[in-house]
Length: 107
Image (cartoon, rainbow, N blue to C red):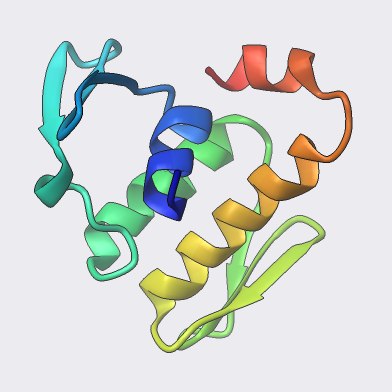
């Protein structure tokens, strides 16, 4: 599973509908893989920021290539890549400990 798949599933709560598309139950909407590219599209990355904000994460940035969500920091070549990297770091951080209650809350 790549970063985008992990973020879609763990943070956004989307379910894999087919091998090439997700289903967002909150919006009753199908999202094709090509329609969600947060590493390359800032608008898509901001969906992640918005969702993490709902879970209590505070987003800060230096404006270009570095972001923080509370105590998780990440960089990237672009702001959207940095957001994606930080979101994935949150997933990795919580996957390394027993955090089933957190994932139940987020998904």
